[in-house]
Image (cartoon, rainbow, N blue to C red; front, side, top):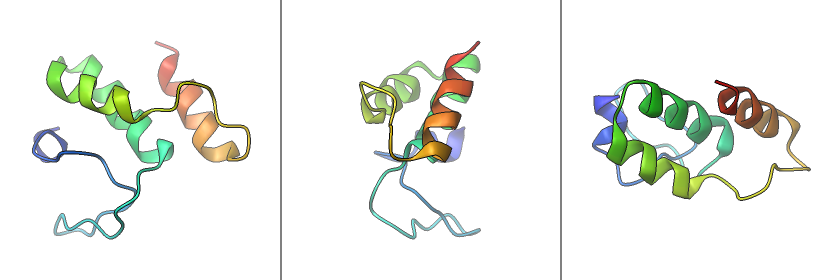
Length: 74
């Protein structure tokens, strides 16, 4: 969580050294980080990642939508 807490936004892929591979965001990455931040009480990170999540469940990307739904069920 400390790694993501230092980032302005969660991007789609990172290398093992922590370098962002892409500049775009993806719910498949953001939703689990948002869930972990909420669970571990990283309030500022949870609020930042919540802004990155779509307002409605994605219809064209099954994998991202599935992760978003699963992480929303707590």
